Amino acid sequence: MESLKELYKIGSGPSSSHTMGPKRAAERFAERCRDVDAYRVTLYGSLAATGKGHLTDTAILSVLEPVAPTEIVWKPEVVLPFHPNGMLFEGLKAGKVADSWTIYSIGGGALANETSRLEVPASIYPMSTISEIQQWCTREGKTYWEYVNDCEGPEIWDYLDRIWTVMCETIQRGLNNDGVLPGGLKVARKASTYWVKSKSYTDSLNSRAKIYAYALATSEENASGGTVVTAPTCGSSGVVPAVLYHLATSRDFLRIRILRALATAGLFGNVAKTNSSISGAEVGCQGEVGVACAMAAAAACQLFGGTPSQIEYAAEMGLEHHLGLTCDPVCGLVQVPCIERNAIAAARALDANIYATLSDGRHLVSYDKVVEVMNETGHNLPSLYRETSEGGLAKRYEHNK
Image (cartoon, rainbow, N blue to C red; front, side, top):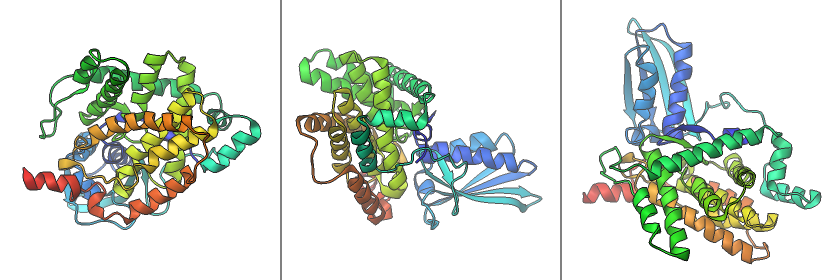
């Protein structure tokens, strides 16, 4: 299992698989193919279906256009066998193809071809299931973040400190930005309004309004192409920061405890990424917002003193109750229903934490089993419910507008 540095990445929204991945691919192709008259990039499947809303063409053109004129070809009806997010890069010289490269954006900004990952990160975690790690915790008398420390080494804390700083900066920017999000849906930013309204409430309603505001802040920044942290993706980047920011500001948790919670959250996200997928085009939104909810629930439960079994239970609930969640963004934009989903999932993560903390941690279905079910469910979902905007809410909106 890879380092948490491969899960938590700083980048520009609105999509890790549709924006960050294609931009990295364009950079790689430009390095190997510069002496050409023009470029042609063909986008397939989900990348083509929702690429304009996800700014895929903008990301690619920002890299290739300064080198040579670039044509983007859209083929949403063609889904390559390896992964729905396929791309064909071609360099043209004297009207002929001088170089070509087929590559896939597989989620979280990572790239792969049919045989292997590009820039394959080292596998530094000897165990890749929560059940194995939980047994280790029991045997060693330690908890999840200590397993991260043992595997990653002390340098992971400087990295997570930087990740936490960017998460906080993104929330603060989002709370202070107003206006309409780009893309044509005319969705107004709501984070600042929710935060202001929270001041007039007391107790639990105040807390709930703030958690919504913080999740909206990051998700709205992401939708506008701002800087976010993949947690585990751009489209689900609002959940984990919202929960941790709310607890950090309302409960005065020390910074190191927040970083340890980030480590635990990352561990649960990493297991889902390794044994299933965090790509909405591959398994639907359950792999994005569902996994983010599980990560946030685990982090919250640890902060409130949960045992390893209670933490695992909180994460299991966070993911279990998102099983089957489709990815059907309206107009291909990471706005409706994506932004609201982040806010609701953040609140649900706190509910999962409370439920698990009240229990003794024992339950029937493990987190690992839910990850397996997510993988099965995702691959059984028709393609129109996996980030193509061809079904579900996206189709209803198009039909009724």
